[in-house]
Picture (cartoon, rainbow, N blue to C red):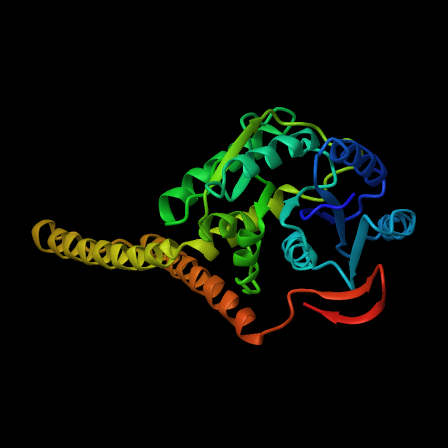
Amino acid sequence: MNTTELLSIVVPCYNEEEVLPIFFNTVQKECNKLKNIDVEFIFVNDGSKDKTLNILRDLAKTYPNTVRYVSFSRNFGKEAGLYAGLQYAKGDYTVVMDADLQDPPEFLDEMLQILRKSNGEIDCVGTRRVTREGEPPIRSFFAQQFYKLINRISDTEIVDGARDFRMMTRQMVDAILSITEYNRFSKGIFSWVGFNTHYLEYKNKERAAGETSWSFWDLFKYSIDGIVAFSDAPLAIASFVGILSFFVAILLAILIILRTIIFDDPTSGWPSLVCIILAIGGMQLFCLGILGKYLGKMFLETKKRPIYIIKEDENSRGDLNG
């Protein structure tokens, strides 16, 4: 079919051998419903340790005009996978999806129609979960608190429940690719670049197969990276803690002097002194930890290392860096 438009579907993959065939068949059926547009799949193998790469090779051979893939030399993380997929996407519209089918592929047609009918007024159609049914309660609780916190301390609004699953125009994708920072937090970058976004809401869905590679600790570290990337409020907190501890120390010193003068009560022994030393030491380490986090991110940025290294794609194998 001769068309002037192309839709690129970017899919980061890490140990997705169980769900990949189901994902491709399901999404392909939905793509067949799309009118007047060609579709390309761009799978990014993020150093998977299972048979994900073999499945991608087979798909590329079976569907040479539809399926493309890139395979990293090791696991660089989902953020690197997203960036690589967007770099390889050629489409007039680009969709980012997870391979676990928690992103409803039936939204693709609606997303495309919204962008087409907007006449350029809408640049992105995103998705957000309105429920977190099926998730562990503690994960849902901390996720909600994260969105509340980051939206209070950051100038960049990050929508609660927003997913990476979204369809973007070429202009917005190019804007995202212009941000070449090493420490990436895509949810924040999607919002920071601006452009008008329309959200589709849906209820949480379970994985179609396999198990998630995101542990609670991984999500916690990811949330910290997001806060550091889009807010300097923790640095202000460190300064506030330092000033507060100074004034508390002055007040305690005055109280001790007054108690000694008025009540002839000498200063208590070592237990109180040890408690004060431990408290102040703890605050100092906390503030140093905040500073260290920002310095560490700056250190990684100044190294100018590639965000990812490609070992293989559907056409070649070798030294392809991004």
